[in-house]
Length: 182
Image 1 (cartoon, rainbow, N blue to C red):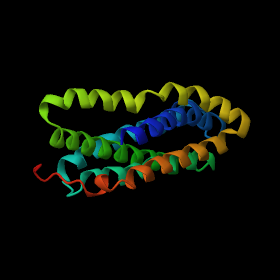
Image 2 (image 1 turned 180 degrees about the vertical axis):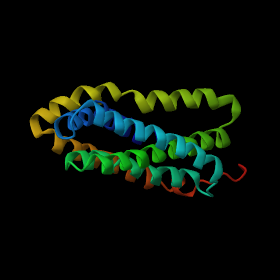
Image 3 (image 1 turned 120 degrees about the vertical axis):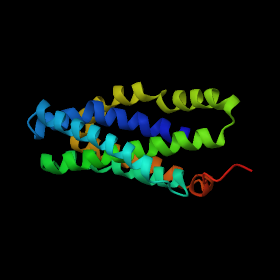
Image 4 (image 1 turned 30 degrees about the horizontal axis):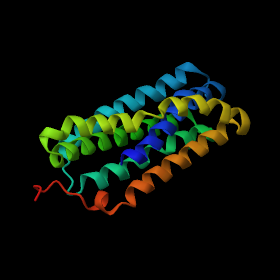
């Protein structure tokens, strides 16, 4: 999970903090459009949090990883470029997916990691998950300069899909439940 999120977060932050604002500037009119996209993501995060309180899946990591696919449409729609309303709806769904994963990941950690080790495991998780974020942000612009912003957004979406598929390829992620540990 942490290794996959090393690459997923590196790519996600480069895509959404460098490429997405540029895509909104060039094809959607600028900051107001990007503000709408980010606001919709925020509302989606709230909705995902509320949903996480209500929905208790038998296999939370599987549901969380599948929910991460909801991050993929936004860069693809920005690459097209699609109408702002379509991207805004996708950004709402992205927020739901991000929060759904976060809730089920944090719950799995708390459920399966002994209390005495939880802070150490969480520290490794956070460090591993964000260590390459600055690299993703640093290379996103130069990549877009070489291949174009639209192509870079599509490449970003592809990296996200590969990272999510890598997580789903792990049997323990697919099978883990919140049943009491043995």
